[in-house]
Image (cartoon, rainbow, N blue to C red; front, top):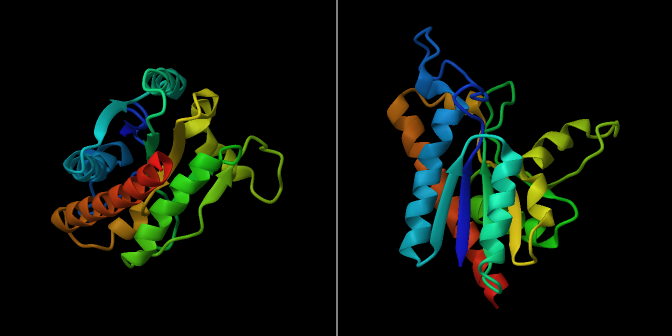
Length: 208
């Protein structure tokens, strides 16, 4: 069983950023690109402890890494491979919100998102039902669903043993309510460990 953890955004495009500790300075560590590795490290630790092969990548262009992920999955026929694109959400108001996105064409991606969501709900996190991302920016009901699709779009073209999900386990605005860098680190590490158990459930289901 294999899990690919992709730290998305980049040094030049760091994603959501908030003055998390309230000191009036937007520090490097307060940017999405520098926060997601905290939960990715926790995920990798839990997965490796359960015998899962963990592959990691980072940055752009996403399409290049999607192609690489497809090649890695193709080299392991019959072995379940989960691809996880790492993000944090940005929602005004400071509320906590965990939301997983999958390519609406992918049943495997849907099940992966569902397993992660279920484990997070059981752990007491505020979650939304997994959302199906799709390429229709003219859809007046949800034009924003194109953005999550961009993070995983190339995965669907890979072999049947590969499925992808976009992780958005919390909002940066909620992290800002926690009071300290240490508390934020603990929160993200906990999120990562819980999400890893959801991924494990998916891997076991796919392995049959």
